[in-house]
Image 1 (cartoon, rainbow, N blue to C red):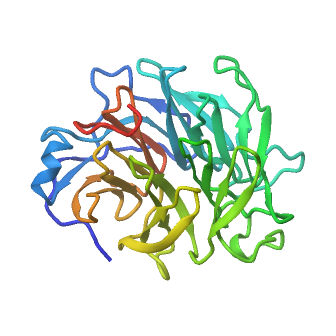
Image 2 (image 1 turned 135 degrees about the vertical axis):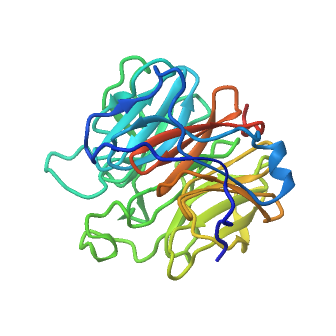
Length: 342
């Protein structure tokens, strides 16, 4: 398994006295400069064209239980992100404190439940509407509410495969033709793999077409998690977050009809959420407390070190800011690279 190298450039210490889990969310936006955390590890000279030499991750908000699924929303001029155990989506905008934007976000049942019940991955569909991978409700759903007056009103996009409920949809991406591709590990089930409510005997990668047809594309990954397309959508990347059995990021050729060809190991590492820049470089969250930056040919060029277990990342602003969810934090780092779609 690939690991981070030892040398760290532009390293900064974690702030002392971090807030306990579940504490009031603290926002760093109104400081003269948000507090730095971690640093950047440089392995390949090509990284210098993507990450400025003085770049360092910055803390935007802290005090969450477990953050996930950041997405830049132009209509809001800010970032939405999930706090899964708190069943909430938060909004952070520059100059404002992070605050609950939507609750509940992933479980709308009348009977209280524990575990990772909230939304996980978030994305915008081609119409600019919010789509949520909902752990507790075990579905992909679209928010049916105005941006500036959100309420927990959802339309189910898909909730089952061949009559069996999904485990807990985790991450989702939409292709330019309208197809959604999403992963379905067991993390949102209260008892995981042993939960009696688990109906499927696999952890799959699925495709949902605009006419509502759902198909199973990958059935041999033990913990499919993050998912992303290459810039031209010819490759679908899927990260497996199984550190014992399948710590890999897979690459699948995408056929014209949306089906997948045989997968290949793109990079040997445990992975969670992912983002892709316009040059096709992959940003893989999770391993060794940070974000790996891997070239289109599978070479590790360097890492953004967050010092925290890191769940996901997404480009925002003008496309050159990478927002990162890491444990109880929302972070950002200013890059030279720009994300796909900007």
